Image (cartoon, rainbow, N blue to C red; front, side, top):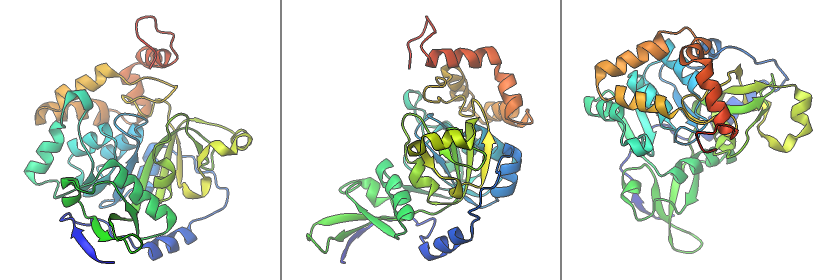
Length: 330
């Protein structure tokens, strides 16, 4: 195929699919009890310099209990990908990120991320490569399919393509230009789900995002779950199991693990806390004070929830179920 255009962005993670397939062949396929704490999972499966991925979008179903533990343990020189916002902001605030494949880092109506700007302008984030949301999802899909790249229309004719590591080629079948994006293999994926069994079979209610593709694009997968249920209950509805056990390395029981983000049908996002973070993130000193209070100042996710307050958390839960008379159901 004739290459018509090449993006000028760096390919942060080369798509060695043969090595990835070999890695997967060596992963245990037995039904092993994988339950552990956030501290145990992060200590065992996340290492300095790893390429880390999170899943879903914005503040929806963000794996905050896991990300907070990454920060607490000070895993450094991370390369990061994801379409979430709050969790990436926290990793950036702790200066743990060295390179990024990015779509957008900002807090919706609150504007562009303050810490992202500081980390990039300071040079602590050395590499940023731009992609569209669809392109990143397609990169995970390519890995899940076991192919080194996948053709898409997304990004054609845009400057996003120019600053990516994608290529435009002449399609050998039609002669038209088509964008090729490389497969993206992650060292570790962090995914929050509604329920899982002790082996790692995981189910998601509502929008499933790109959880299925990303889980199949990771060397190691850490699942946090609102609830841990019996395998027999999982097997009653096998069609709802988005992530099968043999992809998963750790299962963490973590109610409200996406706070201050939202969890579909479980609780709404904590708008007051999001605003608190936006204000705190404007200056380095207040950013550090926020981290000291909500991450470094607590030992684990349980202590974090106690700091937030159970009454407040239950109110967020009630709002999701439409029983709060002062707020609309969202």
